[in-house]
Picture 1 (cartoon, rainbow, N blue to C red):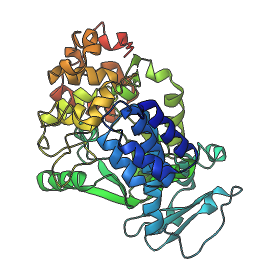
Picture 2: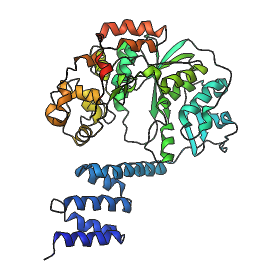
Picture 3: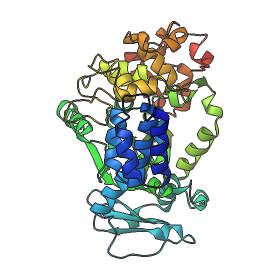
Picture 4: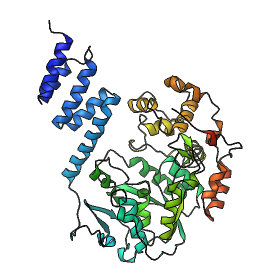
Length: 452
């Protein structure tokens, strides 16, 4: 009789001998049985070694386990790279090598396309008509280089050129999501709205934000400027997933357009969870952080105010603002929805769409994994979201914290107004008054120190 231990030994010997396909096929016979966990591990590893990225992702979808996440992430990166290679990586007609001695020489323009030569290749932006690189202040180009490259090219942090004079228009790096829309609603009505748009194949779907932009134009007359770019690929040269190279790269399109659009400030939809709370877990005096004492100064050198118009508001407060607006039915933070419908199974749907009363599946794979991770992502807000959706039964390990009074969480934290410069501060305060109540002293926010 062949025992389970003997079958494991045979499979492991095949795997160690790099006979991945045979090891995988034998492992498939063990699924659902005594050797199930061992078999899933061998199958995932074998698919990875065989380079079958899509099959690996499909298998992990059917057999979710935290131990497989690292392989799923690697497979997703490899799949994205394969798609990129199939599409081809755009390059300018006139090519030149990376120049570390003259950083600004790495910028060039061909027609409406702005090019940046970085140490690993090229990235680009498709700019509005009449944009001109030669009319863009050197401080803006240096700042753009810094927010894109400084983790890997420290020389981009050392720039000293004549300070740019501020423009006259306020702007918002706008995503179409809940936090971003709350920021839009608290800023002056003539604030420029500009969206960074991935122009390469990825899992992100633009149809939801596009439907929001159309509704904004129809209902308010305001237009959202879309700037296509592939700069989120810079991270992939360093073994990281597609995404913003740094947090401030989310506004690089506005930095580059600051002269063209006569901009004096750039705003972000950054909430309490990323300002006054560190990773949503523990209170900190945000005004004393290195981040706050560094980046506004760098932006100021380029004639730009660095504005956080909802730093005093939580995600719950942002939801409350959007729910009271004329955009309540169209604003959405889901990145995987299609048309005007959210997916209902992602983490954003759990803590954004669920509290808005929209249908979600709180038992989906992704939501279940995130609810059981430690530390809990966006912890204070996740606890509130569980409570307002009556989903406490999904997380008995968090019962102690969910039992707390969380009614203060959707109110505004007045000290946050001190981080907003005039004239925006007065506008933001007045508009906040119309949507939200203010937290009262002693502030419960200051006492947040979660171990979840």
